[in-house]
Image 1 (cartoon, helix red, strand yellow):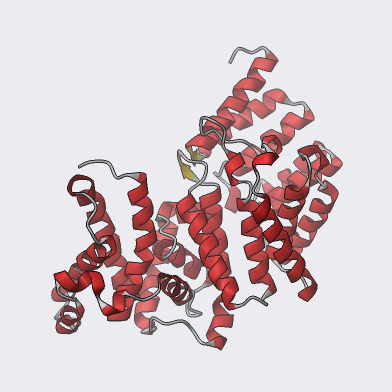
Image 2 (cartoon, one colour):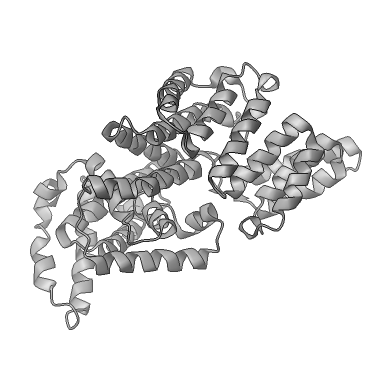
Length: 420
């Protein structure tokens, strides 16, 4: 079997939520539809490299997934007598490409699937995980890393969520005003996590996964178009724009990771920065700022600083102080420690990291080691920094991040004259 071209991988990821949506409309069974689409994606990965891209890729996936659904119904007929219904809903093969219910808006499908997965009967964590799988196309392992939990735990969570949706009989449709409001926070969290995984890939050999970050940004724009006066939606869109504006400067000529303080700011997207700042300026006066508006404000301070040395760290520290009071988030605590170190010195930041060492959500991850190494380096403890940079490199699943950490450790070792 030939290798799957990255462009085809991107196409499959973009088509997956559309195909899930089509099958959901036909069968009103999200769990079965999602399972069938996953099998169709595997089949595409096996057949397309050798057989070539089909004329209608989405129709191909719909056809294969529909057959999987039909097979599942046949096997379960003693338990669920609906085989004829499913079979009757599968169009003839020569008509699939132009099937009437396949012609719906992919934008509408993405939003409807988002809100369906974020049903109030699910816990927020389960709803977010399920949506990242169905809409974002993340693997269970990637979602587990985003939530800082074991992969087995996440697999069980997703399985339970799909079962709850099956039992609820939830129709595939955009929710009314009350349901919309009840699910909005979870939907925004999904989009935030999807973008975060795309902008800073937790695994693989790429710094950025545009398939994820680009899709999150696109759907967030759709959401903002629906509720332009909702401050936190504006804040989320501003945050994504202000962060994505730095994307092209995050990699060097060889694809290596370039940290924020070393990036060429001339490569930053000033149009995206201006749009993000305008959104933020319009949202902040509407009421008490939420987490997304505050994080957008931090991003704006970074983006508007003429240089790394001129960054307004005292203001950033003040914003993180407010953020800490809004949520119990270990990543906020890590960033707060960094901001503290930038304002009060590395010793103050290291003291805060000592308090985080017992946080089970960070146990076994590379993040705490990487931040501690950075602060030890600033404090002049180069040997301690080298050891932690290396340990962080061992713990990350991102190839480019591992290479960066190891290269940094090697440079520090050379400066110590260790020859390591």
